Length: 406
Image (tube, rainbow, N blue to C red):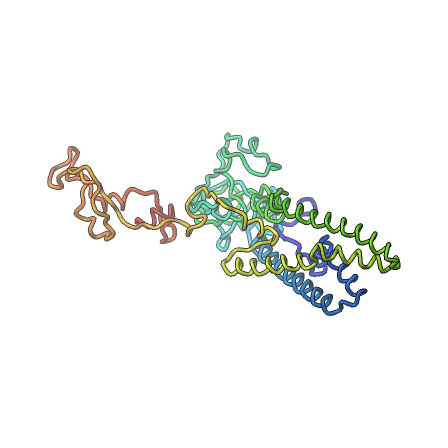
């Protein structure tokens, strides 16, 4: 346990004080504080107070939104359940957070619905739902390792992903177990006098943030740094304003010196000119806009851990997705069946009523006999038999579209 750590993805939440400190170190907010100080010296108390309240409200809203999203991500990533583990040739019940690589776990135990870590299937087989990791709604079948396959030689535990050739033996963390089929186990029974049991056993390979799910969570928390044209243009705009302010600072300083104004008054007036050229309320306005945008996204079920990316998303013109189910609902639905007329050589009308398919045949003439036995196969029989579905505990399991057709 000291070497591998606990087998859970526990994201440490930053306190409000840490988030406030990181937000306050933003250069725009530092400039805003300096501007408020200058206005207070010039006795612009009401304007200074208004900007201070707006900035404080924007920072507070940003902190609350970021904290709420971090909690949702933490609740999604952290998972602990009860498992039955074989250690030192003895079976025992413990929490999944105590698992370490090398432990043997019984996947067929009741209550184990979600895989807590990456494991290699040793005995039995199972059907799992990997949509949480891959987005694919079709369940995957996992088989146990066969002696002589040399699977362990092909596994690189330090890599981010497993080789596709060995993925069929691996059940990944975060996937949901639909069915675990037991096989005769070579491991001892739960008690010393019990007969040789049937189990679906798997060996722990990776735990915590080292798992496939942990890699996904790390990519969410620490995305790769990217350079956006929006930020580059925004910084150019700010630097242009800063350049204009510097020119005005120099010209104003020279003019005030010629008029015999004291050095302290010259410094205050010149710095005040900079605060006019670069609007100090700009960061507060942008923060308030991002907070309201994040709230609207949250109502739609979209959570953003980096509100600054919302501005970048507004510049997106084209979005390309790889498959159905990303924007639409998970899986497809069946509208109806459209058969082909063998005599006319074209599509018939769309049949939305399944009872209307009983008299629809694959033969040109339903009355003719096929070359191999009886009349042609009816469409409703073809839909009812041509599939890869299986029944697990009285429930159909398989491709969602085939389930809808069945």
